[in-house]
Length: 309
Image 1 (tube, rainbow, N blue to C red):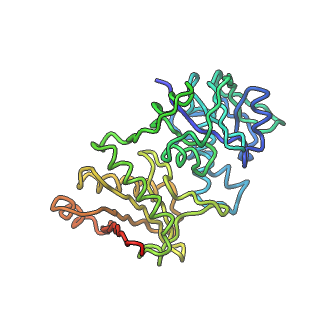
Image 2: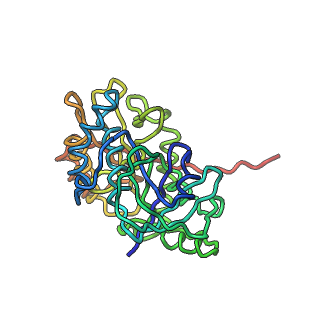
Image 3: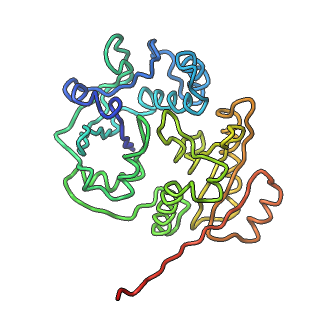
């Protein structure tokens, strides 16, 4: 089954025109070597080696930033498969659609030297035609994002048909409308973070002034929010839940915390977790009683109508 990815061609799509004309996508990240024999099957193994190489060229970068960059480099070079579909913005609200047609190759001396050949289609997708959820996914920070969860909508858009369904990309969500609510709550939480209790002590992780802590990728899936304490001594995994088994989320957050501790935390940083949900039950209270490093917060949604005079 083919997958779909949004791939940026340089910051603010600066190299898009060249890539469209010459038939390739690529990355740089100032890793100046041929990666042909370095692209392991598991991105985590690749990150383990190249994170230090990346940091040697960027000593100001954190483990979080280095891990993100190496993950993007591996995904474009290896993770995307021949036959997968890429959508690349041209910088003006239009996405060029292409099919990956080659394995990785190195093009030293050129822009975006870590390359894949692409067969560009006579197809374009307008950002304004996308559903709000797809707009958010294609507009996420970073070089590449996996948007396969929106395959049905993407295939319709590529075929020239407009559809805006509510789509759940999570198999544990029984009601797609609840999934849509969860994503809106996540965006609302991010936008209003500084006004929350958590925002008093933590900031959502940023790198070079860009927000990278929302949907930060781990080897067991994306974390809803990765935050850092204002004094830099602690990393915080935040998971927002709606419409799924209550106690299962504890194990999920623990897996994310383990990844953050082993792969991202600096030597002086501890790791905590937070679950945010509309309500709890006996199962999650029992589980949380044995996991003191995870806290639980309830959210409240207020809706009010005021009659105009």
